[in-house]
Each structure stands twice: as structure tokens, then as C-alpha cells.
Amino acid sequence: MSLSRRRFLSASTAVALLAPERLRAHLATAAGHPSFPGGQAGPYALVLGIAQDAGMPQVGCYAERCERARGRASPRYAASLALVEPEAQRYYLVDVTPDVTRQLDLIEEPGFRARAGERRPFDGIFLTHAHIGHYAGLAVLGREGLGMAPTPTYCTAAMADFLRTNGPWDLMVREGRLDLRPTEPGRWHRVDDRLEARALLVPHRPEYSDTVGWMFRGPTATVLYLPDIDSWERWELDVEDVVASVDVALVDASFYSAEEVPGRDIRDIPHPLVPSSMDRLQGRVDRGARVVFTHLNNTNPALFEDSAEAAEIRRRGFEVATEGMRIPL
Image (cartoon, rainbow, N blue to C red; front, side):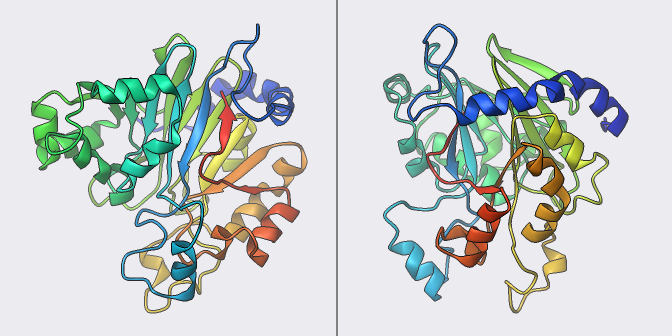
């Protein structure tokens, strides 16, 4: 079922009214675990990767940008998040990339590492869609790899059907490792006593499944994770309204320029260009919204902090995510 703009606005009004104060609290959070009332360690989203599906450096790429990426002290990984609840020792993974083995090293909580040793690292997995960078890492969680214990896997009905009817994922379903939980887009779903999740359908190439972004609501904040969309104009929701309803929005920044991919027609791989997204959302950012770019293609110069493009993003009040970034929930 699609979610109309009117229904979205009605459901989001209360959150939108609270967003500026929550944002100020986030910006005041010190390094380390986000604080929870009473001094407890609060839940947070942890950025595990910010690159497009095939990562950075990309396969077969020996251009200067990829060679430079190979020499980074802090590697770039494909776009993904972890949701961490330190006190409750609960851990969720948002998209499972081909880089998942090394990405999990970024989750430094002792409780997570102990659970991984018991083959039950996650309390749940959230999937956005069936393009390789968002689910292909599931393969190493199965019989030939981690041998993961049964794990709730939240996705749309179409994505669940794809996993259930195509190998090797169907084996993981039959073995019970992927406990599929088809989720109706547009509705909040209680995940645990500190976390709710809401899927938002977005227009994006539907070769194998539909595509969603996820909203995650914790005790003190709401985060949007929307790594892939064809066009803001084609979305039935207004991205400005969606951004206004959350505390932090991580959004698609695949390409900075339409000239980035010589030899390919960018119309075959549509995404909003970063300058266009900034133009559309500048008013919200000027009023205190926090917009963080993720899912950057290997050709996007903003992957490098010292590029003119990254500097322009910062100048306009936007951010580029980075591996290890923590966002309070």
C-alpha cells in the first residue's frame, strides 16, 4: 500500500515539531556513546559504509581516485547502518553489503562481539531492496560462512518473495536463518521497547523488488535512511516534509555530476544529483535540519574530504557521512 503525502504529514506532525530541539541535543552529544537520561548509554545508529553498491575502490577501477582509495587509512565500504542499543545489548543491521565482514569490525561493543561468537549477532536485519550492495552480503551469513542463528528480517512483501524464491537466499529461508517479516510500508512497527521502524516506498529501478527507505525512531530521535531513489520529483511524498519530520536524514548522493560516468547513459542509473538535492533541501537545512549524504558512487569526488565538492557540501550546511559516524536515536 502506498503512503499518501497527506497521511504522511498527519502521522509526522508531532515528530516534526520536536525535531529542532532533538537536533540541538544531538549536536551537543560528546564523543563516545550518546547519553541517555540518567547517564545510561543510549541507542545510536552507526554508519558502516557510505559508498555505492560496488564499494570504493570499485572492481576493475585503477583510475587515480580508486588507487587513492586503496591507500586510505580508513577504508570506504558500501552503504549500510547498524542500530546499536548498548544497555540492552541489542544490535540491528540495515542492509547487508558485500563488505559486511569488515564492516562488522566497526561495531566495537563487547556484547556484539560475544554474540557474534555465538552465531547470533543481530536481533534483526532491515533490507531496502534487491540491488547487490544492499543484500548480497547475506550469503556469508549462511551455511558456508557465519551460520547465523534465526534472525528476523524486515523487508517488503516483494523483497521477501524474492529471497524466498531465489537461490542461495531460499536455502537461508528454509533453514530458518532468515526469519522473513514482511512489513507494510507507511506504518510504524514496534521492533523492541526502544525502537520503532517505518518503511517508505520510493521510486527506484524495480528489477527484482520494490525499494524502501527506513525511518527509525528511538527514545530521543528519529533517523531517516534513504540510500537509493530515482528522483525526488517522482516520489509521491515531498522530501522536504520527510526531512522536516526527522532529526537526521541520510539520503542518496550517488552522483555529484551527470558527467561522472563516461561510457554509460546516466538515465539507465538515475539518481538525484547532489547539487539538486541541496537546492531542494537548502531551506530546511537553513532552519536547522540535519541532512547527511550517503551511497556515493566511486566517481563522486565528495568521497574525498579534501575535494572541492565536499567543501561545497559543508559550506552549504550539509554533511557527507563517514564510516564510524554515530547518530543518537
